[in-house]
Each structure stands twice: as C-alpha cells, then as structure tokens.
Image 1: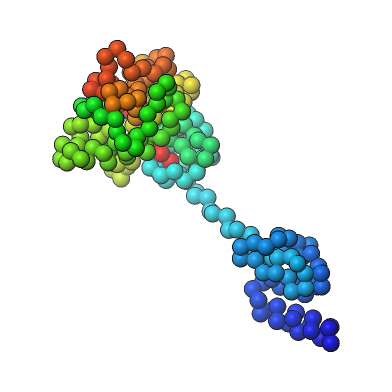
Image 2: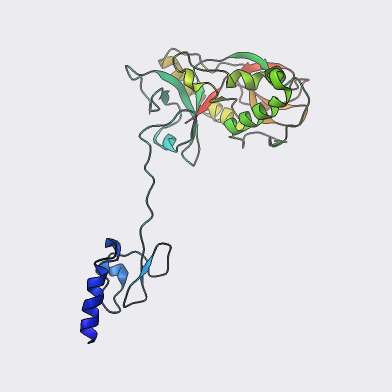
Amino acid sequence: MKNNLKFLLCGISLLIPEYVQAQCVENENCAALGYDSPTACDNGIKCPFGEYWACREPEKPEEPEAAILGQCTGYAKNCKIADILYSDGTCSADVVSGKTPVGVVVYIGGDGCGQALALEGLGSFVWSTEGVNIPDLSNYGSSPKKDFSSCENTKIVIDYSYKHGDSASEYYPAFWAVYNYALSTMSETKGKWCLPAGGVLDSIYQNKSAIDQSLTRINRENIGNAYWWSSSELNAVYAWYWYASSGNFYYYNNLNKNFNNYVRPVIEF
C-alpha cells in the first residue's frame, strides 16, 4: 500500500511545475536533487516525504547592453575613469570612429553608477542670489569630498527654486545653467545634466592627467585652472567651490553664494 501511495504521489507531482518534479524519494535531501534550500523559503514547496524545500532561484535582472544617459543603471562598472562616454551609452578608452562623444568618465561609484564630465564649460555663474540654507540639501561643514550626489543636489535646488515661479533661474543661475544645457546633437539630454558635487570634483583632480589626455584626444576643452562651483552646500551663506589647479576646496574670502565661478556639468550613466 505504501509503495502504491508513493507511486500515486509521484504521478501527481508531474502536474506540479517542473522545479518540484522528482521529489518522490522518501527522506531524500532535495538539494541533492537539484533544489537549492534545506529550509523554508519564499515561493518554496516542501518535499512530499522529507523536511526540505525546493526553492526557485531568484531571477537575475538583465544587465543593460549600454548605459542610459541621465540614469544610473550600474553599467558604469564596465567603464573606467577617463574613458570617453559616447552618445549610444558605451564607453571606450579610444576614439571610436562614427560615434559621438558625450563626455569623459570622471567618477564611478561602488554601485556601478558613474558620472561623466561635459566636453565644455558653460561659463561663470552665481550659485545663488539669496542667502538660504536649502531644505533637504545636506550641509558639509569641513569638506565636501564625501558628497557624490551631483544630480540629487541639483534636483533639490531646482525644485526649491520653483518657489520663485518664473524667476526661479534668476535665484539659482548655476543650477539652471546646467539644467538647461544639452548637447547640440542630443537635445534629449536637456534636464539631465548636473552641477558636480564635491566628491566628484575631487575625483576629477585625482585623475586630472588621464582625463585631460582623453579630452585632448577628442579635441575638447581641458580641465584648466579655474575655480569651479560644486553643488555641495556649507550653510545659508556659503557653498563650496573648487580650485582645479590645486584640488582644494574653499568657501571664504568673501566668495559667498552670490559670486561668479566657473560651471561645467556632469551627467549620470
């Protein structure tokens, strides 16, 4: 009778999805039969004659074939700092004929998200014309080198500036300059460029020679020796600016937010 019952249950198991087939062995370890967990799990089915569970392996998300400009996809882990980022979202250390350069990779996070520097500067702009400690924007009291949130910072400031209605861009010119920027060949990148955070600017300095070599390779504007605005805030009066020649950050010498510094955007990928 017991054998007949086993036969009956085995026959029934054929009607269950294939990841629970071949479970009809008394007290058998399901892991030995190709199932992956000896304990209860989500979406698991218990072996009919044992204490083990057959668990579906979680589906692995498909990696994108290339980066998506203006969006963190994790693709940047396939790139390296100083690579040229192209309009199709791919990156290469070499100049690739037939492809359009968008920027040069200047930062790659541990999460595989990267930022690329624009191939040109936008000029000099005021960070802000009002002395406000912007809500939701983190303050960095000693150094902004741990701030890599270029696009998050930019979005916070842009959203905050809307309180001024149609005059928003007059109150936060540096942020609106990058927000309105777009490549002449890629108008769809408008609204995706960001004012670089302090940590990204520091990464630029640490890799300045290699980045400049890539910019020279594609005949674009080098890093230079200007003072650059970061998107990292100190307090209501000051924001951090960066000296490309030395890599140092400053906020003093009467250079408050209402002062013109060089602006060059980055884009996430």
